[in-house]
Image (cartoon, rainbow, N blue to C red; front, side):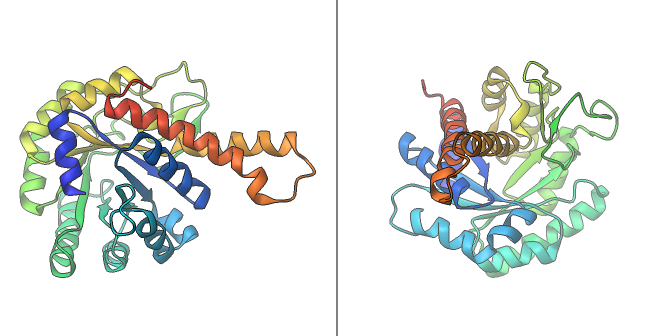
Amino acid sequence: MREYIKEAEEKKTAIGHFNISNTEGFWAVVNAAKKLDLPVIIGVSEGERDFIGIKQAVALVKSVGVEGDRDIPVFLNADHTYSFERAKEVIDAGFDSVIIDEAEKSFEENLKTTKEVIEYRNLKNPEILIEAELGFIGKSSKVWDKVPEGASSSEYVFTEPEEAAKFVKETGIDLFAPAVGNIHGMAKNLNINFEKLDIERIKNIREACGVPLVLHGGSGITDEEFKQAIAAGISIIHINTELRLAYKQGLQKSLSENPDELAPYKYLRPARDAMQAVVEKRMALFAGLNF
């Protein structure tokens, strides 16, 4: 995973990170990666991995990824992990990367927990990548009716380059997730763009901290801003809400058009295909492909 991120940096592209909750999501991501012949990261948050199973998520990725039949580079990330204990369990399970998210806490508390995770990773498997965050972009993957209350207030704290550099140096993390105008979730009206990325801040943070940057909350960001963010130093981009919306809409349409269908593999296929279409579009954009 480290080598693919390095390659993305050199090419000024980004690797797509897509969250899943079930096997439909898994195959939507994997099939898109196979079709485009691109590396991909599958993410499972605490809630998602509680639903799908930690060992089961590892087994799914190993069955198709670089540790399986080497058909396609698929990596597994423990998204938004809120405690040392929960980070420990995914490190023990053999995830490729872990995000320790203490962004809501003080700098000192964030630093302390992140260092504990790094120390444990070094003991168990130094190849596992550890990511951490500074600044706060919200926690909920919702589809908002309007601009979320407080989205422009001090609740959504932007990351300062100097503080990012200090945090990275003192923790030794491999990846860094800044708050640069990105917000978890997306607007219901796609003509509303309540996220405005600070591209210059991204560039300054990348130069200051010296490690690859990860952009969270990608579902509400415009294509042009994605391109600018990648050029400025973003190497991984997270998409989740768009996939959840595509799945729900695809399933609703399938059930309404086939009310008598009882076979799950039949009425779930359109939902899976709807997610795959989103993944393909995003992966191609991040990789600079004409699609």
